[in-house]
Length: 126
Image (tube, rainbow, N blue to C red; front, top):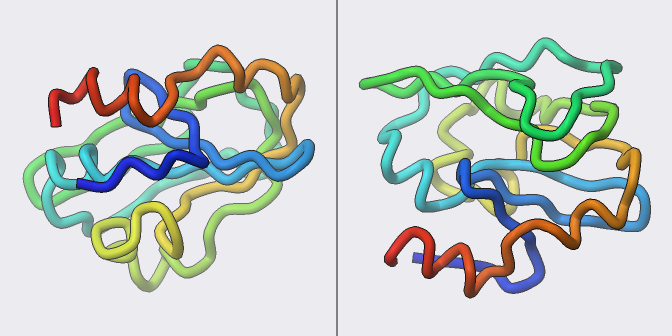
């Protein structure tokens, strides 16, 4: 299982990749393996500020539906358009083409409180 060191992680299995005052957010490889084949992603918070730990959408897999939690407070400026037609990108490339949203960070320093790759790996026991 992959735990890229350039990302930060949450206990709810989201990852965040920061680029200046913007960031990409998705779910981890661990999460997508636990969910199984992802068939639909519902994110309807474009243009809205979403607070840390609030739900910003859902992921539907063959077996279950799971909430997506915002790792840090930010405004959703883009939803990955590829996921409309190819939600399975989350399964095949969770840290690349399978990203979910791009946000403008309200406070970039808030990312420092998230888990490192090593800490997240320990949390999952993988």
